[in-house]
Image (cartoon, rainbow, N blue to C red):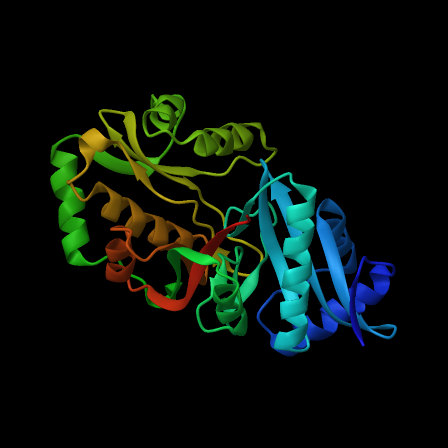
Length: 308
């Protein structure tokens, strides 16, 4: 008989998680320390038949919203039982009535879009996985569709039309360059103008770091009008991408496109072998990524349910 219980043996849970992760080959396997730390930061239930674990569910809270982090089981029936038990707990607890499956989850799980390629954020639930239909059956609604993009940088070159745009913008005093605090102005003000406090934090944290990372920016008369985050190559060869922002008053000049292409080129020169990123399937920026040779490898749904 299958029962849903609280966790009694964390090591047994990790062994089950490791077995399922290695079989599925979707997620990057967490160390036992990282996995147990993740469990302790949130809430969990296990499904058991006798003394054996055959499924588990983990969720986390953030600003009075509940995020589903993992739902893993040996069968659809087991996962269905875990989901029903979880929703019952949320109803009784009464701290929130919003359940999300979303990239804003405070726990970010790395996964493999393809073999030997790591992306640092599992954005929701894959459209082609069993759990998507299970959540729909339980009246979770699709909030957005998020696409994961990939590009091998070994063949990347900046095309002539982008070079032409770079030259045209330079004639108007607009250039793409590494940020120099002694020469350039308005970086923090830029983040405030585009309402991006998270980028302000990234910039300030980078300034305090032992090894300060270069920042690629768009400038007009030495004042920041565009930003694409710090440049670094991750240990797995992935070129880091934080996103792109351009002042509204400067849009329509292909600055975002030229900035992104320069980012790809600089990351390649720094030794990055590939890049991954994700964005909404209706985001106009997707055309920049496609023009740069990126391809959609996986599509996710972010989902939401209001508990009554």
